[in-house]
Length: 89
Image (cartoon, rainbow, N blue to C red; front, side, top):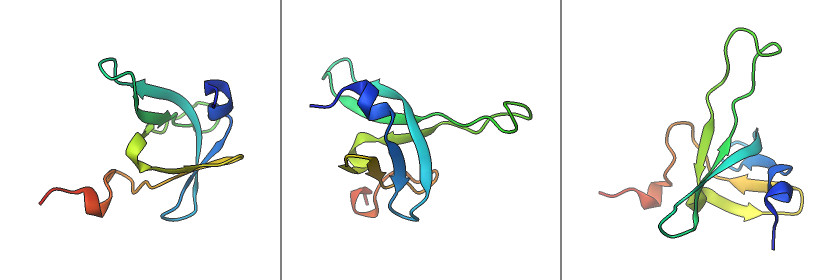
């Protein structure tokens, strides 16, 4: 079992490019099913919060590949959140 506080301190890493995306700041829960729909990585402020803020990164739960001891591996491609095999055609 994993507590939310433990979940939030893990680094989130994109397997597509190996880039660290940040830490989980929030989660989206489907109130009908009670399941987690997505995790939200809060945008970091630029220059101590001045000059705007980066957008939040929303990772659908289905794009979480592995939750490890220190990191969470996800598949994220910018605005393209679905995996190629999951697109409808």
